Image (cartoon, rainbow, N blue to C red; front, side, top):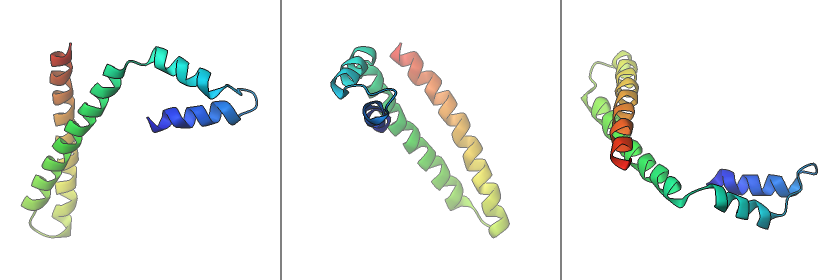
Length: 96
């Protein structure tokens, strides 16, 4: 969403584009569905919560010093990536 505002500023102030902001926003509204934006925001919140839970779980279970911290971070990153991929698949199936 911040990128949309950046696009409006750039399209208005860059000489070779120089597009009226009203035209920019009207075009954006016609091309972007609110439901898609809402779905993306909800999924981002769910994924963020999932990543936090996995990372905190790995971090709190870590014992053995600095070397183990690196391994715990790697485990948390890998587990988070896999969990996000699986959860994204199921959320997408539910939405369709």
